[in-house]
Amino acid sequence: MDEERLGLLKADLDKQLVMIDQIYEEIQHRSKGYETNVERMESLAYQLHNLYCALEDLMKIVANEFENRIQQRSDWHIQLLRRMMTDIPNIRPALFSQENFFLLDELRAFRHWFRHAYSYRVEPEKLGIVLRKAIELRERLNVDIQQFIQRLSE
Image (cartoon, rainbow, N blue to C red; front, side):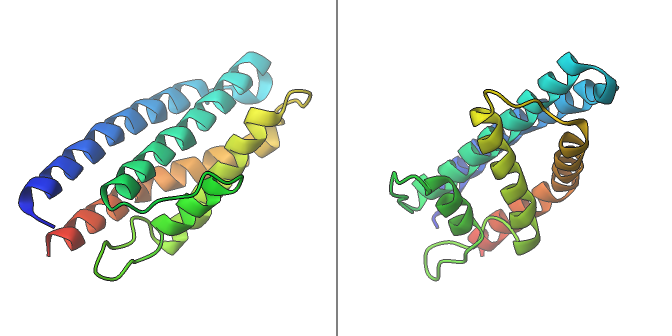
């Protein structure tokens, strides 16, 4: 990858990571006492939904840069995620590690549930599981991104 394209890609990824960090700050703020407050619980669920949407936008930036087209099928969300954990020889390295794939897939499944949960209540226990996985991912996400950029630079 030439230096100009790499610089643009890195700038786009950095901008998206800033948005992701802002969502994480909202998650941290709204997670205090969510177990006993329905409005706070719903607000936290909404931010976890937003987190996956922002992470998916990060994946789209990479897919679009390398023309990794994803068909607009009903399963395109999981196809995009699977593609981002795959090294594509002579095109690009994997964006995410296998370990982070599982955390991201949990968030993807939660986002899907949240979008379609019109008649369901958010349960604090389940929300706590997703919250823990999101926090674990935060600690590891930047490592994957930095490794991705480094491998592109080589």
